Length: 334
Image 1 (cartoon, helix red, strand yellow):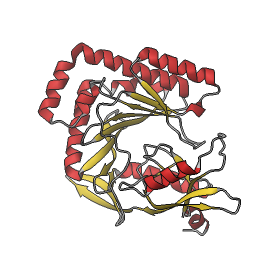
Image 2: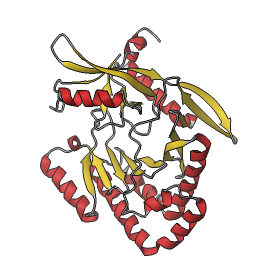
Image 3: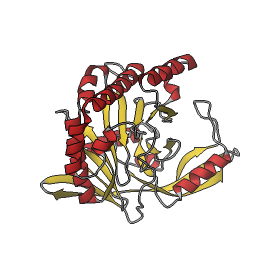
Image 4: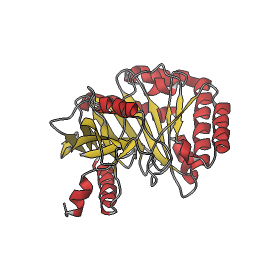
């Protein structure tokens, strides 16, 4: 059993109502599953799913939201000369939280608690709106003190990036890239400046910011994720050039067909090329490259040894830490 959250006041001075806990319970128990992650890190592939959520009261009269979980069974498979980790479980369901509405406004999410005071937050918001006055701003709640700051940008209908990365067929993608011209360049500059302003606010040469760019469409959501520092910010923004994004879109079409993917996340490798990190399939599978699964597992084992809460669940209105029974198993040497 996992304690997801409760009505008690947390370290940020916030608390949830019973009604909010009931809504979260219904989300966990819904038709689509919430993925179980590690440390709220969006670059780590999901480790399992949650199910059977319910409310219970502890001895102090605090209402808890608890749920059971399962961890995926992982197998290694070679397809077309490439090695993949394929994660399955008999209880797997398709995933909640996949963005399908491509007619959204562009959205930038960040955690309010990354600011020392309200004035700094308001200045940051004003600067963003000066860069892109059609941008919507919102809060991305992490609730994990050891995490790198995160900024999530969803590219809505304003950005022609959406047209490049939307899985609409290779021939049409080529035509779009050829026709973009000055409009694309101006939009590229806006996105570049949003990224630079965000990294200047939250990061440094030593402290990275996890940047996630989301491109929703009817059939497939694409994410471009990377840990960005001031010293490598040029490499990141240069990786968003149209010809490079065209290659990403063609890779996405390949993985969509191969694994029935509904969401695909790409990350920059050491050669500054976008490569598959992991994908979520319509059947509730997680598929990805061994390198990133191994990195996740190392971090998770380290968290267990330090007796810290290492699990989290996503695809909800709040990202919440999960107190898992795995800690007890770790204490027993498992």
